[in-house]
Length: 166
Image 1 (cartoon, rainbow, N blue to C red):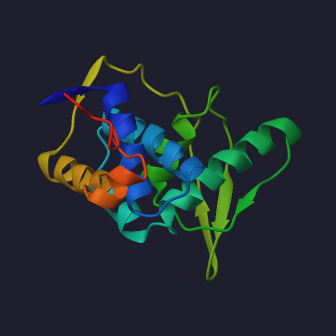
Image 2 (cartoon, one colour):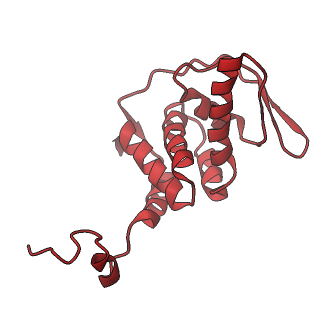
């Protein structure tokens, strides 16, 4: 089944929130998820990032984007204190408005160097396919953000609260 890019980004954002990410990291994850799937990169990178939340590659991918924005502004060198799979790092960098051309290194327990060729993200399609296993996982995590269906939550104002008279 195919989905619009906005549907996938929103689902990815909700899934990241359900896995414990803060709103900014979750939004960056949703955008990177779209770029990752559009580029045909491995869903295992996404699974690994979801496994590690609220820490790990998703958090560090958002950090990499912030650092690369700073790199463009300062024309300096940037080090990111993270280990992120190169394909996932590239997906995050593809979300930047004007993707940078740079080499950066991520440092954690030694030094890991990422050599990224000039980034030129492919044009995005109108719709994309999401692997079934990944879609199931994203939906399961997104459900963690829903308010539980209980009298207490309705009394607190969830849904129509206690005023629903349909």
